Image 1 (spheres, rainbow, N blue to C red):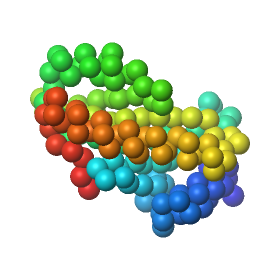
Image 2 (image 1 turned 90 degrees about the vertical axis):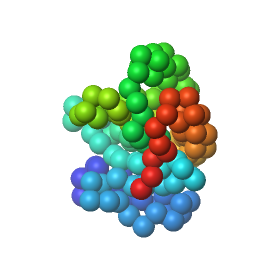
Image 3 (image 1 turned 60 degrees about the vertical axis):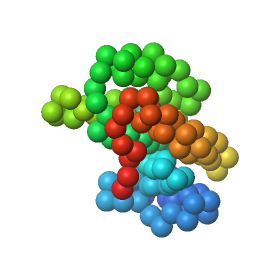
Image 4 (image 1 turned 45 degrees about the horizontal axis):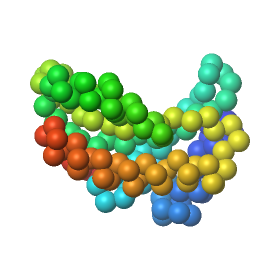
Length: 144
């Protein structure tokens, strides 16, 4: 079993225990949810062939109109959070995009407390922030 597979199994056990997660999707990501916050958890190689990284990504707003105000918020205020930051995924049409929250951390010795200590704050925080962003910049809450 590879290091990624072993870590994926460890993460699955923790997420099943706390969130009832049944397994990873076809991309190897786990999904947990708190109201409008949908959080995707995946495992990847760290630096080169050394170590593993847990990637936590949360789509918050879809179809948000692109504007100078949004770009400024993303680049200044959106990067000023204790656990990760906000990033923009522009649509091919060049007029709209998606706002995501992301947080990565080294997982070589991952334990339950460390994983949950990263996930719970993001689940709560993103559930509030997505509403604020829709109100401020437009767009729609991410839905399945």
